[in-house]
Length: 106
Image (cartoon, rainbow, N blue to C red; front, side):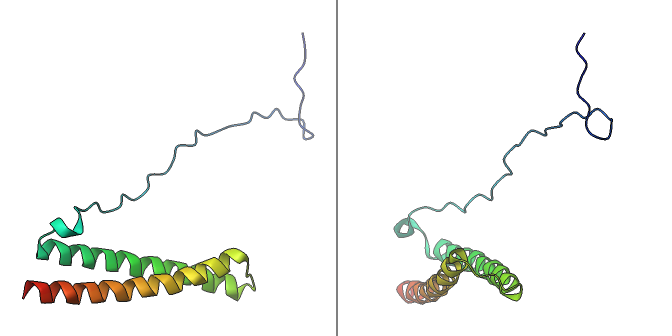
């Protein structure tokens, strides 16, 4: 009969594995095509999207600031910094789009 190998401390060990189930991802707010939205739907979508984008910007900024405080800067950080500029531009575009939608309704 073969003996099981023991670890250096003399105790048997058994590797435990937990099933890796994917964590649920937030579902993107689905919407109809913009040209099919009623004005109130469009304004609501703009508001929802603006809020989500502002939260994303804040999350990324906090991440970048924590890394900078540790003196860490990699090409990924550089890409996130570029993303911040793009996201800020998208926020401005949403504001302009909301103003345009308001004028179209009037």
